[in-house]
Image 1: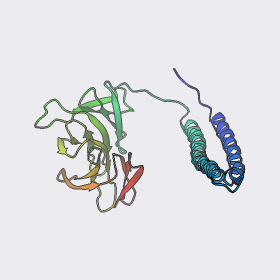
Image 2: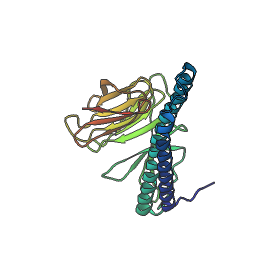
Image 3: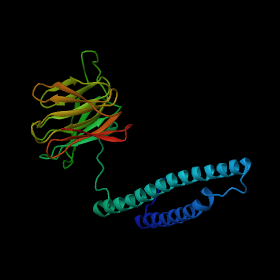
Image 4: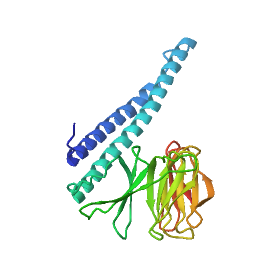
Length: 266
C-alpha cells in the first residue's frame, strides 16, 4: 500500500480549511451577543433562572468554540508547513540513489564526517553496530559486538548512536543491559541510568567530547567523560526525555516527550 503526495494539493487543502475555520469563527462571534446576553422575559424568578441557564450554555459554547478554533488554526498551519517541508525535501533529493543491504534490522545511524563511514545500530535482531563504507563495492566493513557486561555475555539492544569527530569514537546506547558502548580500537561499556534512548557528543565548548545520554526511565541526562569513560553528572530534565542535540556553543537541548518541553542544559 502506498500514497502519492502532491504538495500543491496539500497546501490548497490547508487554505480551504483555513477559510472554513474563518467562517465558523465569524458564525460563533455573530451568535455570541444574542445568545449570551438573553434578556429575561419577565422579572419573576423562573424567567431569570431560565435566562441565566441559557446564557451559561451559550458561554460554555463560546469557550468550546474558541478552543476548537485554536485547534483548527494549529492543524491547518501544521498541514501547510508539512506541505512546504515535503516540497523542499522532494526538490532536494528527487530519488533514492542507493539501498545498502546490511542484514538484521538497521535502526539508528551515525556518520564519520572525515571518512564517510556509517555506524548502524541493529535493533533488536543482533547486539552489534555495523560499520558501512557506502562508497565501497562491499560496503559492510565489519560488525562490532556491543552491550556485553559482567552480567550479560550475549549483549544488548543498541538503540541510538553518535560519532565524536575529535576522537573518532562511536557511542552506542544499549537498552538492555543499560549501558553505552564506546567503540574505538577497543570497545568499552559505560553503565548509565534507566532506559537510555538518545545520545549526542559535544563538538565544541568547554565540554568538548563529552557525551550526553537521555534516560527516559528516570527523566535524567547522563554526562559521560570521554577520557575516563565514566558518568560524571546526572542532570534532571522533563518527563520522558528522548532526543538530544548539542548546539555550536556547547549548549545541550533535550526533548521531553511527555512534558511537551525542551530542556536546555548549559
